[in-house]
Length: 112
Image (cartoon, rainbow, N blue to C red; front, side, top):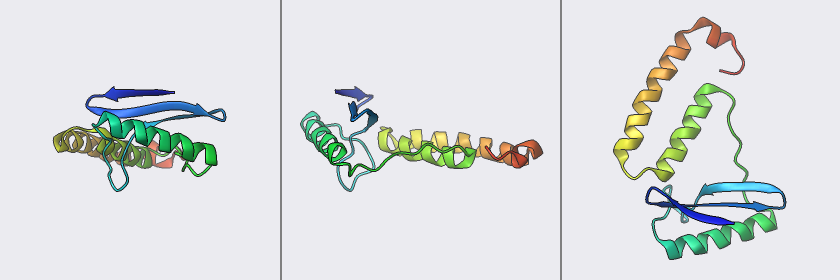
């Protein structure tokens, strides 16, 4: 069980019933991880309790490029300290999407 700061935001990592859980500690109704240590400890306990009860939603990683980019940006919104960091990554990944779409080999591949 671990609680640590990544930048200014708190994250947790633990293993419950053989399942590795590593995610930011976001309060209810928020998309950004908390910066308060006391709140992070409480959120970590709630997350472990939910995992033990089996009510924790699973995170599935995307195989397709565009879905993976969207997942990355969603995670970035939860952990970024500034909106500019999110905008910066979003702008750069739009270039990747455009180039991948123009590549005929990439469009045929089921993993893109």
